[in-house]
Length: 107
Image 1 (cartoon, helix red, strand yellow):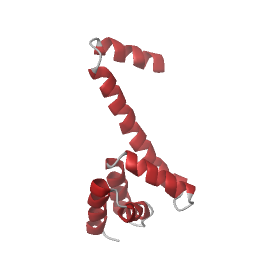
Image 2 (cartoon, one colour):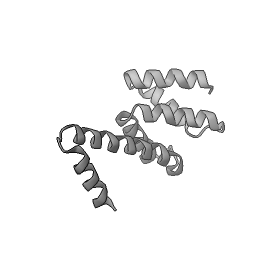
Image 3 (tube, one colour):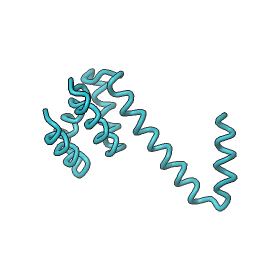
Image 4 (tube, one colour):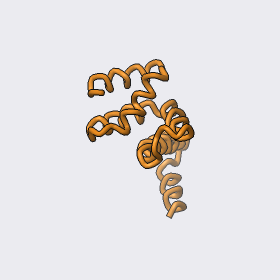
């Protein structure tokens, strides 16, 4: 597998959620080439929720090691949380006060 093929899989996965393209990206997460692993992770993270489902399926099937899937899934969840906070802030007139209060509650 090479970077051009991985990019093509990423485009197909993002636009069509084609399972074959997605599974090739999952396979890329375990590549011996560190650059291909990072590329596969970036492409999966970019697709968000559909990638999360695919990664969960790969873990359940025992196809993917949790140590490999974990960072990718964590980044998807981090982005999901950021989007929720942003959405919450846009709907509130006292955004700064609410965000400050939310952060203080987390501490």
